Amino acid sequence: MNIPLHLINISLSHEQIALYAPDQDFVRKAYQDGSIAFPYWSQVWPAAIGLTEFILKHPEYIQHRNVLELGAGLGLPSIIASRTANTVTSSDKEPDALDAIHHSIQHHSLSNCNTALIDWNEDFEQKQFDVLLLSDINYEPDQFKRLGQVMEQFLKNDGLILLATPQRLMARDFITSLQPRMQEHCTFSVRQDGTETLISILVLEA
Image (cartoon, rainbow, N blue to C red; front, side):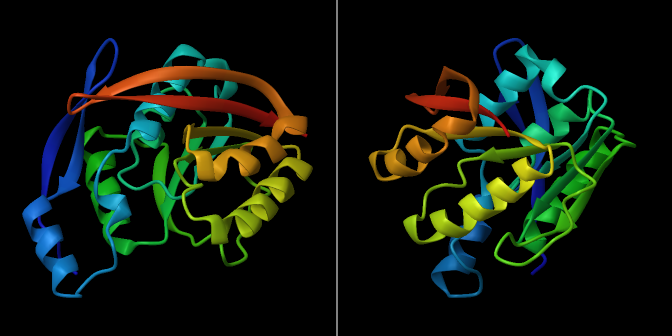
């Protein structure tokens, strides 16, 4: 679907960054009339901001590395990661999300950032990536098993995972299962639209 896009400004701790985002009225009407699935990808969630803040504070985790973001949505962490990473692949299963990310990549004139259509429920080549970025992807319990498999396989290939998640009760057991792989854990408070959300950042290694 050809969804209208426009630039929005996302406020971070020490700067603002422009991203392309879909027209929200258009998206809402398309969802209501059944033209599109629920558009999780169409806005910047607090976890993406939290992950971005972590990357800005700790660029050493991605510096000179090849980075993959799964379920990127509008790709905020990918855009910031491209400042210090060797390459960044910003992926989502929704083509409309990739269209928005592509426009943001062009807007920022990024030569080391690209997009890819990837659904983690399907097999995909991951050995070329060193770091996996995940933000707010653990919100559907029936996806936790497959998501855990993807993460475990990535770690077995000597990868590093940066996971950002709101502190949801339903995801507690999933997060607890990751503790043996956890090298670092910190919390960011993200204020968005007058609401404060606590975001946990997990650094996972084999």
